Image (cartoon, rainbow, N blue to C red; front, side, top):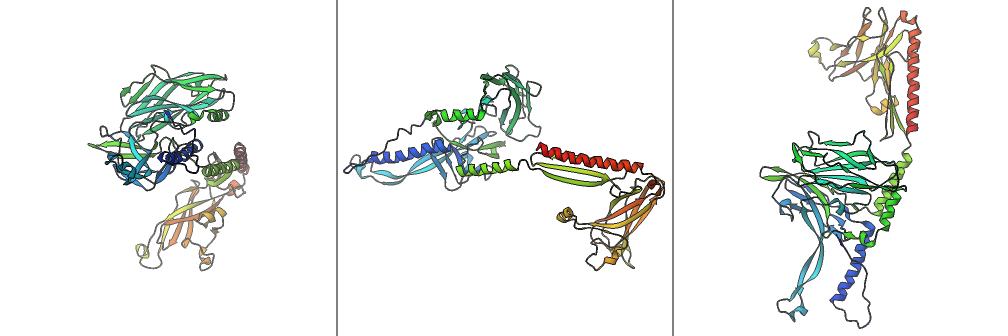
Length: 563
């Protein structure tokens, strides 16, 4: 690491008769550049400001879209127009291995331009009579074939600590833990697995080594197995841990020696000596402690930068195809190097404030369906905290809405297939009959009275929600033909067949000529004189429904309180 010494700042002092040389003009530029770059670094940080998306344009080339960034020395990087390049033509790309992950990086660069005749140089050396009149602030795109050290990324250790558990050309395993936790606090340890796509199926199993922390899953064994059909280059795994109840001490977490089994398919990988992640257990607020650490760090630490600063724009996953390679996928800004301006942060804070205000609001949805007669009422309650929605599904047995013992009600949809006059009968009107299956009315054996009617329900969701377009036609529906009340369903005649010994019946409809498939819904009522004389079972059913409705109200109230 090196430190950029922008300070102390020194500017020209002008006076009449001062002799200005090249050194004075360069000092003038350096003064303003250094001040701006230091403020960029301290106030904004480093990373992508806008644009700079990387897109695969074919199997071997990528395009970098126009955009802007700030590097870790505070220098502005601007790409004024899209740039398309073939990977094999870029600096840093080697062809020694095709199945790999490579990283497309961008760095600040300067180029001399506009050569001119230098009069002063001609008096010194005859062969040095040309110089450049301008310096173009530009950029450089190149490839790095190894992932960066996590500690080298901007603000990498501000809120958490990342240690490398294992790394080679095909696999990297990282462990991330928070820097500070409170006594007894639950926290997550994140394991991140990075691999090439064709490296093989990854598995990792080890025993957790920790001091002053304990695993919350009932076992200290950590195990990860890549899915059988896995086609990802990165996976994350969370392990829930609890900190010790003692404040002011340091906890550690890592891999227990001689317990690790890291494999690619059946190939065992040897883990080196392990670095343990360190966690400070503190009594104070974790956020306040992190902010205190940030503002108290020295100016030199705040301006610390790599010797060759760059920004990782994309991770490009390559796979080998025969003697060459193809681009399989492109991941944008894989290490989260972004710069957010104050306007964006303000908008985000407003959005968060709005979410906080509406977090307590509960959206309820309910649905009521008709069950077969004789079945018990059903109640299903589901709460989705992500969208603050409470859904209640209530099932009521057929006949539950009549209020009279011995009467049950329901409906049946009878499918209608298209037909023509010639296909049915070449003479007279074209009609065809369709029938329902056997329907159990739930009134037991014996004679029952069946009454039917044609029912229409709009397919429009808005009308259905308002119950504004539901009609039940009794008797002959053709009397409404030609009026505003004319049914949309085809002209039908309805008949019934009862099976007293089975306690069932069947409905048939005769339909006039139809050219489109659809359904005819028939509402039915069944009446039994014997059941009307016995109201005890009917009373029990009504009580069951009342209990279900009460349970529904209690569930909705409980969901609102929980939210």
